Image 1 (cartoon, rainbow, N blue to C red):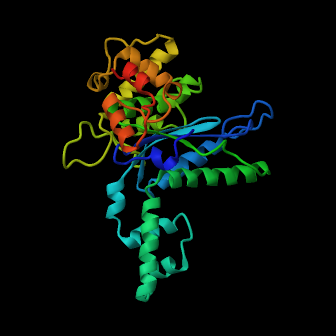
Image 2: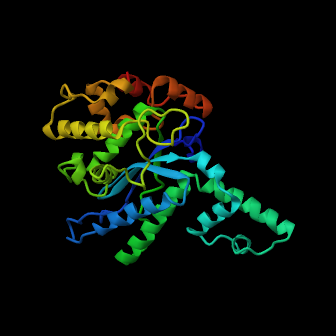
Image 3: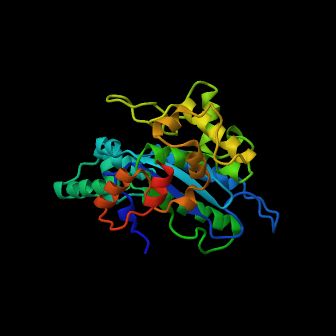
Length: 324
């Protein structure tokens, strides 16, 4: 049986998650339909725009993403601390940018004076909204529902657009996070849809490369901050230059067919995460087939299963083999 969604998300164990949503139709989510010749390429922009927009509303940051022809990947960071810092009015205003809310929440935001019983109702509603604004299910649901409606209208049809609810995986440590981000960013390379990471359209790595050329980091993506210490701003626990070099070298290995080997210039990030070059190439090319469920070193995986009261440590053999 599939693990219930509420059990897959455990902020006690990790704020990082990998999500995948796949289209159910032969007619493609994006790209060009080889049967009809019709192009759906513009739909990639729909998803990318929604990912960047929702970062401004939810307490969820985007670490990496890739929009493919019939599915898309996104790696997210749930910022629970940020959500708890919002005032009640900020929570309501954020929610109202996505949904109508209630008559009472609208009146409160407009500055109307409410009787105490009504104000208590608003406070209770805001508490629910605050939780939703840091839930992956609401984040992904808003994207998928909007895309499905727009695609159905464009295709002049009805029915399901997605094959089911999105899939999610917990990324329990830095090794799992780095390998999953690389897997996501290199999707177009593996699919022969792009020759280099910086030319991979509708991916986070392309956006990072464009901004890196200007000595900047994208404002809509979670930034790289290197080795974090107390008091530093939140961000990915790697150096941007290490990550981009890692992506480039891994991508070159995939394209040249050099199985499980990276030249002497092996990135420092692999040494720090204790992953061999051979295992790294396996992880970043076969992430979806190697892992089903939470991912990380054995200790992190054991803690996660204990917190979730799971009897079986899924992925343990693969994690031990590839992360050792």
